[in-house]
Length: 294
Image (tube, rainbow, N blue to C red; front, side):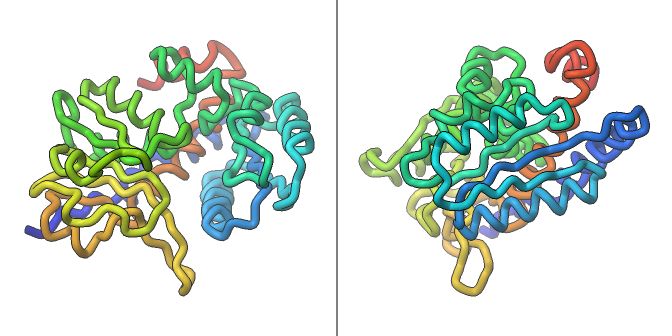
């Protein structure tokens, strides 16, 4: 068996096209959309991701400010900058990039991001509303997991999905979004005993732990769908996922590639969220904007 490739490029292009059109309308009305990305890390995979966001934003007519505070930034400085961006009427979307410096925790700092501008769903208020089924921006990577499955026509209702990873950035919010699609979800993590025994029973495996090659053929039952969220830098400057793609391709029914799978969809969704944030601030709130566009 050779796994079907679940590319995210076509979906990402469609989302970017929509965001570009909306951004142009807003700019013509006198309010250009602006995204701010706060960075306090020297991590190379994060740098690659931030560069991809900036390039995509520029192509879509969305201003993108990279606020580099340095890898040694104190939590108080990060919090103050997030608060000032939240109060800035010219900024419509804010992202706090991870990882953070030692002593700084995302869950402690993300509350300084205004809920209305929290386009990557990091604020605990956003996560709580997501869990409650209320309008909120979901973390873009978690949303991308579901979006790419939808795009390729993979029905989630009644299916068993094993999510490997329990972060508030991907694992937990992805589980909530999958539950909303009537999937039966199992969350696995570093303390899970005999990971392969669980994932090999799943119809869909979502790998989101940040460990290159963790998921191998023994973790995947024949015909299963595998979504690889990992973006692990290699010594030659490339990227590999959390899935051993060569080994898994012989048994899986479908597999997202790295790069070219979840990543471009995540970036595109951040642009869509930024435009939505600006439109919702102009009238009606987030729920009204999404209802009008559905």
